[in-house]
Picture (cartoon, rainbow, N blue to C red):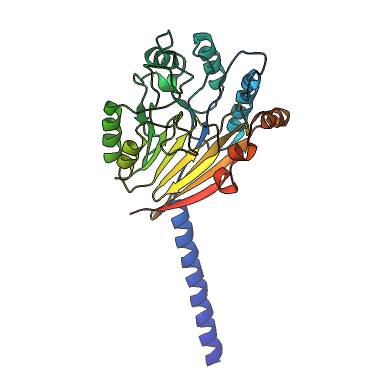
Length: 320
């Protein structure tokens, strides 16, 4: 009888132990803070009716609409960022058409400039482009500069950079000295946050291309490296699929909608007490016939499609 009593006592203690463990597991899980967003890059919207290069501009409207439909069907998206080259040629009517389609998104959307978006010495300057965006997208109505930041929720900071040179025709990028100082200040005051940076020209190249790189990439990288909080940097421009982890910073290059592999990103960020997990997903178009045509138009399809870890990756950064 004594043995039964002891056995029953241990059984009860075990049940209590399991219950307490489950309680703390649930509590820990529920305290995690999640943010989700879509990144769409290099849509190159165009009214062109004929494809004349590896960019299938004649399919740009259908591809953009497909990406937006997929995003709208994805649960728990907080916002969307277009990382440049929203339009293929800097024409006002093309921009207005693009905005009309983008406004079918069910979530707020933001934009960074691309080199195809701006006319050099023409009507569609950065100032005019920013004005048109603000007049037609209430999310951007208060934005007066081509670079800006916002707080999507507590504990997160989003920074939109302007990497576009507008005093000469070039595919290279640069972040001017005023903006570099501003970036440093934004990062300095956000050291307890998860920082998400969006730009057109990558800070770290996904592959070498002297005619496309950020001219002052080392300067900008040096500033980023000063800070030890989790940072994600999301870019386009190279039309390729690449993810480069570097300590507490995750550099993500996203392909173009109009050239192979005709894809975009869905990213979930899970912020826990001791870590942050970046869950980066690769989303292909549903227009498979278009994708197959685009694949035939590029010299090295595998280069743009990337490796498995370039398309889908979970990357954990320990919080200090």
